Length: 320
Image (cartoon, rainbow, N blue to C red; front, side, top):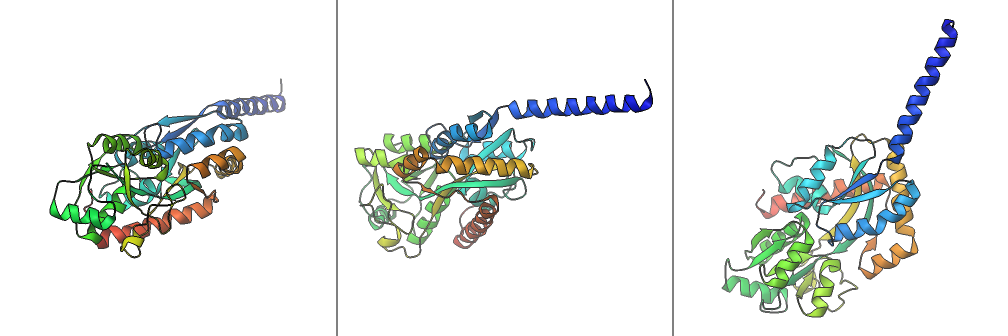
């Protein structure tokens, strides 16, 4: 066999191996890391979106819950994963904006180590409490805290809630004891059981407890009242002018993930968010759908990182 023929054979073999590798890669399940326990807001959104995303991508997406305080574990694992499309993660305003300043030594860089794919949703948070805690307004809560210094625990479900709480306590001139939990579900149960008296939770996580009487609400952190809890006044309405904290979730891939893969993931997220069943369910859960592009989402992350950095540094909030 002459050299030219050998060249053709070798080239064909290389192409066959590459094609086989690409095919194997495309069939591998995609791990979707979620930084909270099952049942929390991030987990619920991931499980609503992944079936349609799997269909669009023609790949199986598997939700992998890795709960930890302020979402550090899952986010760090995602930051160090191979950028081959096989590992992605659901991040939020805490993991990718607040943590950057809240932690003196963060095990990942929210900007450098990730490619934003798309923001799922945004929502205000509820200052929820065990019904035994006195008062029904933010000012009544502040009065109780001032007369009982150091006796009120707030369950910390994530960094956004911690920052929203710390900023509020600074404005009110009171002090609460931050007690970290591994996500929303454990912190909800802690408040219901009276283990902690307060928590800042999404309406998705708290509305059912409030409506059943297992929790009560002192206020909403967003600038407008929430449709799931229309009778609960905003914190700003109750005299804390300019107070506005939003919680968001979105999809991220490890840095250096191929642009075509990122664009394919974005299209899958957009298709899922546009599906009637997801639209209806998000509306029922009080989530405002976003579905922005990777470029738009990247700007949201950068803007919020700077916004929260300013709040943390100016408020004198203790950094971890």
